Image (cartoon, rainbow, N blue to C red; front, side):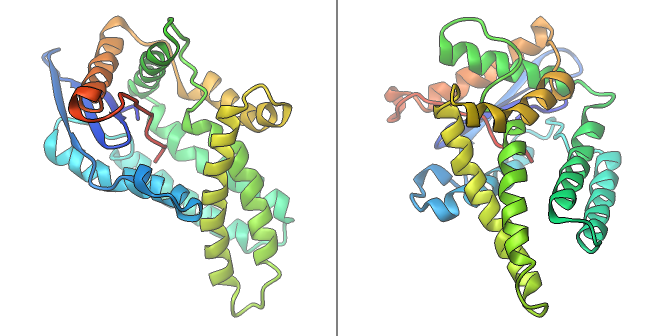
Length: 261
């Protein structure tokens, strides 16, 4: 996860965050994750658990590293999120087709991310995060786009949400709110599993089609080329996480990106 002044990296069990302070020095914090979705085997709840894992981790990051500037702590971003949620609710109650509702809801969901990126270093740190992790994983210098970026969830979420809400709309009116809630959880769970399949089969035509909306969003809007200083921050965060997840610390040395908030 890119921050406005640094990068947060997490593996199956541990997390590490590095930030650049105003005096240009680096500050690093790390530790055991309070919730570890990697230990959950049930596919039905593994997807929602991965998102819950991040929400459980962020308060710990703020506690251990107060200088960390989280992407969605700016007042303008909070206001945009509230406005986006209200607009989505209006769309859900409209007479538009399910497909049109899902497309509009997806566009509105991108709004808070666009506000978060405007006027900050977030896009550059997002690019630094991808370059650092991608270079480590592939053993060669990589571009600012990464195949496991959370933006690639956009395609699967559009598909699974459309299917889920179409089924929920057929429920009796008294049960429809509960049906929509269940459809939302199911869409997240299915999207995470579909996303994992896409990563493992990236040359598959269907996987490429599902990844296309997120890749374009990532390439054109939510990442930018980082400076050497920003890349240094990302590398420090990654190296600390790998140290904690290493065989010498009782683990296998893998690391992964955090899903988007």
